Amino acid sequence: MRYFSELAYQGTNYSGWQKQPNTPSIQATIEDAFSTILNTQVEVVGCGRTDAGVHASQYFLHFDFEGNFPPGLVKRVNRFLPPDIAINRIFEVEAGTNARFDATRRSYEYHLVLHKNPFEINTAWYFPFFKKLNLEKVNAAAKQLLSYNEFAPFCKTHTDVKTMICEVSRSEWVLDEKAGRMVYYISANRFLRGMVRLIAGMCLNAGLGKVSLAEVRQAMDAQTPLPNSWSVPPKGLFLSEVKYKKLFSKKEKARWT
Image (cartoon, rainbow, N blue to C red):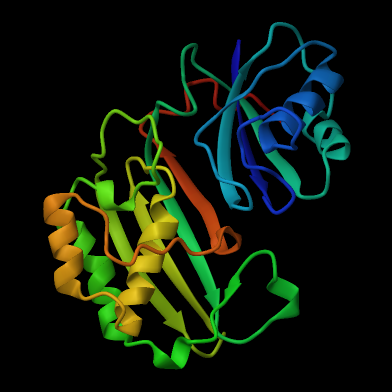
């Protein structure tokens, strides 16, 4: 039987989603919890690979299991997991449904705080140069990307992907001065390695006058690196939504809480 789990996590203490030798990861921590509670080796497949220090307010994984779940599975797993990982639900899906390859859209948010905030040092990036930003250029740079479907300038080097094509459907910054926060929202069918942080850095550089909109267009047209490439810190980045065309089967009601 194949099951999906919806969860959330703060990635500060981890090397990222993917398990790696001799370093803590979200994937390995979850597999350890499920394997202990279900008394058998459980391997999970995630909907994407978040980098070290990146968070997820919505994330999906799948795993296979034969047998009956113990009562209160979600509560049991959550008691075993550390406080920075939370399982929200577990539900049965049709055989073959894949958390990674069946996702049709993913959305990310990048959070900037405009004032130093000791309570958000791990979940938002304090940006002290806000008053120097040209906000019109910041958003113009973001919206300019909607005209393209290849994003090689915003992919980290040494990646093994076969295509740079991404269908971006949203790219915009929203400012809430009253809350002292500016958030970048981006949605696409897929993302390249480091793509969101590089785009956020480009937009801020455009707002600071360190890169022009013409230079961004030139790099995108030629699919070459930007002259001043900047990857913003991971602490402000969240995977915020994952969409599936057909995730829930007739067995959707089979949930454990």
